[in-house]
Image (cartoon, rainbow, N blue to C red; front, side):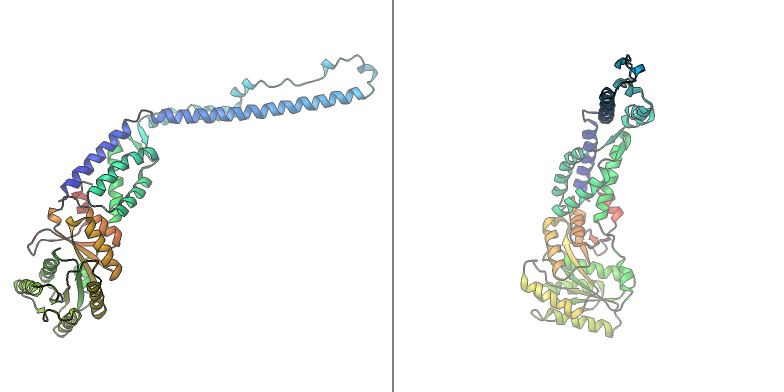
Length: 398
């Protein structure tokens, strides 16, 4: 599962480390240059300040001299030459470099040995470095069915995790991997335990949505099997009265599982079928109602209106969107449309066992802000896997 995505991510992480390590300018040299420039600037400002101070002293003495000349000199001062006036010698500018007040500047100019060693064996990823390495990751994510808006979210969070953070050389690859794992995990919403939820209310009503051909009917049968194995009774409502053979398909599943199917004729009101199924569950103390609906294209306004009516009549406890894991951006667009119209509560991704990319789960979880509940991993009833975020990340090699 997700083999292609896993190999590409591994390759990107390794290449990113090499790209950063091969930068021609050493971090230590950059730091030293910046510090030297700061020291020189402080010295220049100090020199200018001292010059201004000396200039003021000279101007003050000149004014004093002019004042003395205007006065009648005393007898003992008549022959006193002007040169004997006390004038402070100007402080040599070079002396500033050894003055006590510049000790701190010298410390800044020559960092401690441990600081220099630390800089020599570590990196700080600059914004320029990040933009360069993320460009490759962006293409990788898009190729693996991660939606553009999810890619942008990954970029923003990953930048916060990596840029200007001091990283030891030997930890660089692991740090990039750790940051990427954390960011993707943040986009995936951990699902609640469905088996716990269904025991909180009776009957607990599920409505399933999705376009034709994604395996929605089989997914419903798998959920029914999961419930029965955990001693939770259920009934299925064949509310897809639009597609030919849909009722017969559900009848076969219900017969295999030994559960009741509530059905009407083709062309009947789907909301009425769903209502009758809930009524049956209440009268027979059935714990869960599973309502199938017609496969709706997310652009078909009439069928979408019908879906709204079903939700209004049944007031479901959980609305589940079913999509193919391998459908990529098509599944993402479908999820967005269904979520906008009825507000889905979770998602089942079918055909996850043949999905080598894995980006659909990340994208749907991000754009709907709802969890992936289950992964379909085959055609058998038992081949339904509760979505586990840690396991998913492991499948991606993170």
